[in-house]
Length: 281
Image 1 (cartoon, rainbow, N blue to C red):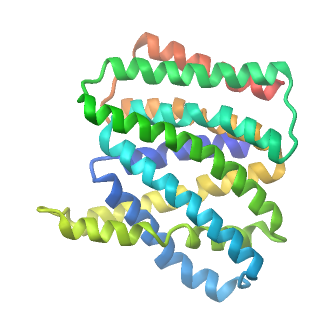
Image 2: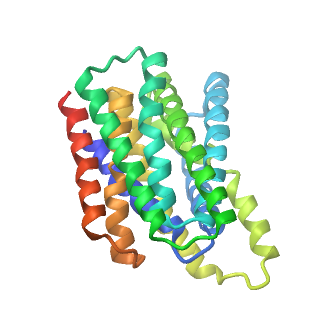
């Protein structure tokens, strides 16, 4: 529970870093670049090299996370952080619980299902409320929300896949080291091409510093949730991790200038209540 909640806070911060004032494609590229540049020498020199089976598992993780990162970049590019982030995170818990029930044979009681439904429903309601108050063009809105929904489904897919993958490893920390490198090889190339094509590309130093901050936060966020799914039920950890929406609302208010208000505060309370019910069940 502690790992899942820590991941929630860090994931909201990770999302805000990627959505901030820089292009989200470039920021994600900067984050992944740090994982490759700093991580590859460490894992190559200090950790055992993965065998053929683990290479295949890592390749699957890289493919799923690449699709996820594409949908996140599209959604952040086209919609407000407090709109697209809740849509993505609200879609994930229900899908993760359903998939984990099939893959791992996990069973949930009525109280837990009620908690997950309350949590996801309140998150979606929060997104709808934010959307109504945010002036966004229709074409941009459709792409942003569609990408956010796809992102939420992929959150569930990678949560279950990563939980299965880390359970295949004898040492979870060896797996995590190679995981961060394997899933970070794609976006640096995309970001570099995008940066070169911009009419007025941003300065590299601020972008690199933002990427470093995101890389550090991301390491702890993904490590926490993957260890949580190794230690406990996957669906439960996934539901608790989506309390990140609460932290995202606070970050959006404090650092991105996006207001909260009584209605949003009430929905945030329902999200927290859903998480409590899920854990209590």
